[in-house]
Each structure stands twice: as structure tokens, then as C-alpha cells.
Amino acid sequence: MGVDALQRLRGFIGEIATLVDTAPDETTLIEQGKASLAQLVAVDDWLPAAYAQPSPERYQQFLLYADARQRFSVVSFVWGPGQRTPVHDHTVWGLIGVLRGAERAQAYRRDEHGALLAAGPEALLERGDVEAVSPALGDVHRVSNAYDDRVSISIHVYGANIGAVERYVYPEDGPPKRFISGYSNDTLPNLWHFPKDHRQS
Ligand code: FE2
Image (cartoon, rainbow, N blue to C red; front, side, top):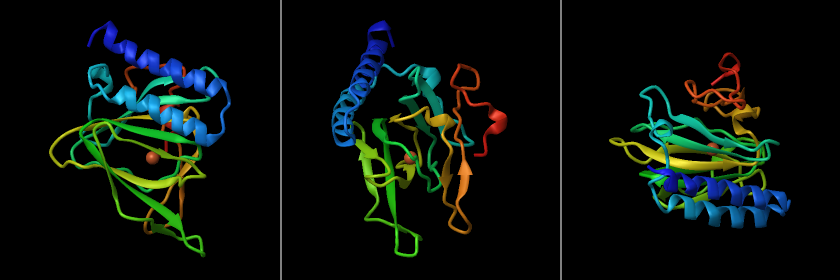
């Protein structure tokens, strides 16, 4: 990975910043953001190895960039073989682009009593595919590595400093649980790293 390769990430961050500067409606933002993210994940030569390391314990969320005004953040999600998230929400818009491997996403919706039900079939996102979530589009899902024998990596963009956002996981056998995800950058501290002691998940 050379300087030119990292330029892809820098260019992408500039595009998202310019887009957010125009305060577009959500449809425009997601459409244009998806186009930029699709370009970024079309070539897998730019993600530094430190941000591509799986952990045997849980999937990793490495912060790549957070906007100075916390209007957006960019994260690499690194899935070890067979790893998956709990059912969770985001509370802000989010874009997901698969850089390496593949992942599965199951969306959930609420029935008339407020209970969560699987909405539609599980989607398979393959390398280069881009998806979106938001409170308007559908904000609750479970995501997993599509592979049991290799690492997958996706690049996520969120409409906030996502590691510090209070949101919910939805256990199958209990009430919703508040959580703040933090980031996995333990050895790469930065201003946006939510204190580990405050992590609940
Ligand atoms: Fe998610």
C-alpha cells in the first residue's frame, strides 16, 4: 500500500465532506454517498494492514476518519470467520460497502405491537456491493460474515461519530439494551475514541 493507494481514502473523505457540506436531503445524500463508496471499495489496495486485522474474540470496528463536527465517520469493519453482530440499530444514516469477502444482512421491521420481525430474506452483499440503512429506510439489522473460513471487510460511513452514539441492541430473549460501540483502535488512540471503560458492548 503506497501513498497513492491511501489517496483513494483521502479523496473519498473529501467527497463525503463536500456532500455533507451541501446539507442534501437524505435521498440525495444516500444516492451520491453510495456512488462514492462504490468507487472506494471497487479497488482493494488502500486499507492499511493495521485497520484490517481480525480478532478471534469479536468483529472489529476501526475508525478511519471522523469529521471535525461529527457530521460523519468512516469505519472499517473486520469480520473474523463466522462472526456476526447482534440485532442492532444506528439512529443515523449509514452506508456499507464490501471491500473484501462478503457479508450477509438481515433487516428487521416492527409489527403492530412493536415486536421485531425479520423483514424479507437475508441479503448477500458481495465484494463491491453497497447498501444503506437509516431510520427512514429501515434501521434495524443483523450483519454477519458470509464466510466461516476467511476474513471479510466492509467500509461503513455513518451520519455521526458512530462510536460515541447511544443506540440499541435487541436481544432475542430480553428487552432492548442501550449500547455505545466505541472503536477497536486501542493502539491507535485519537480524539474520537470513546473511553473503553464506558463501552457496554
Ligand atoms: Fe449495522
